[in-house]
Amino acid sequence: SQQGEEDPQALSIQEGENATMNCSYKTSINNLQWYRQNSGRGLVHLILIRSNEREKHSGRLRVTLDTSKKSSSLLITASRAADTASYFCATDGGSARQLTFGSGTQLTVLP
Amino acid sequence: NAGVTQTPKFRVLKTGQSMTLLCAQDMNHEYMYWYRQDPGMGLRLIHYSVGEGTTAKGEVPDGYNVSRLKKQNFLLGLESAAPSQTSVYFCASSYDQGGRPQHFGDGTRLSIL
Image (cartoon, rainbow over all chains, first blue to last red):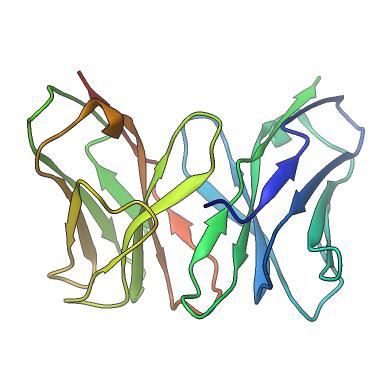
């Protein structure tokens, strides 16, 4: 079963704009991770936020986590055409400590 | 430093045939994973390994077997391929299972006719 669900499923923006993607999950977690997948490639880890953290930054990425609402958001600022990819959230929860991936948001950044 | 390498990259099989997908990592990671990715869906865990000589079932293990004879290699086998196993298969590894980021290969695109 999929723990995380991303919203929107697809997002198209102009270069230079900000992109926001949301992830909702169902059960308690240890941490939440965001990954990027370029077409035809494997997933690449972007950022990890722990359950006791509320916000984290990495370069142009900003991630927030609201455990009371069981949701997270990924903000990409000043987007570039190279940011075009699918973005997945993955939750790490329970005793098995396995990652459970959402279905992803397809981001298209138009030049 | 290659990271995670998957072979082959593409394969077409007929129903009932068998094959093995190979995953190799050079990061000395203890944990390795096999996922499948189907259109419009995220990754689903097939099997995983927490160390050399160990394997465990994930969310969708039926129809697949795995082996981890060497720490750096994790093999995924299809004994009798079925059209429902047409998918993109990804291997990943991580230092441990404690919520660490996973490192992924570029996938094997498998079609079962």
